[in-house]
Length: 206
Image (cartoon, rainbow, N blue to C red; front, side, top):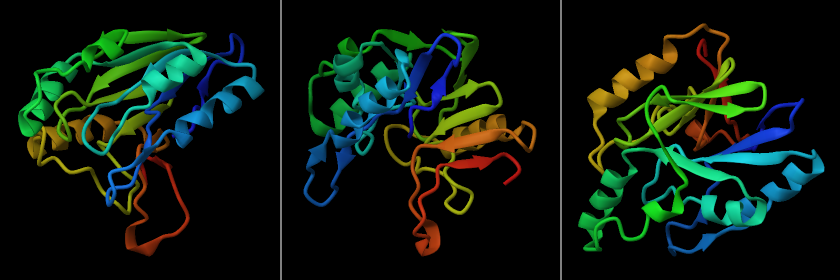
């Protein structure tokens, strides 16, 4: 996702879900996507205040720590991430929490608010895909993480890390119970039906 949440007056910005590339076949990762962000931020004279993760799991490998090393800023994630870390640890036979939680600077609760210059980032708990999943509301836009994809792709899976389809449905209702012209920004685009043009922005109406 592009780091396009910023205040024009103060130059404060937030980056949502900076992640590494993952090749599922080989298991290899690349930090190249994260390394592209600093030039975007610096060219516009922005100051990185927040690095926001909507969630974590197997194929969502956060690059937040690397981005903080490059640009500074505080990393924030949902306050139930410890439960997800323990669920992952159970699957792979790792020690509980296996060093995950010390990477984060702030743990966010539902309806909490974060300052961003003249804006306020509102935290919206949207469990279902994972039970720590958050969406972020900024003005007339919602950054949905994996709760909603593009209209031709549907939603993320909810069959591991104690995901819950019923909870996901309720989370989707919370997002779609807004005006038709509210912008929605998705985490992934899988090009449903063979669509080759990448897309990441939609609306409630669409």
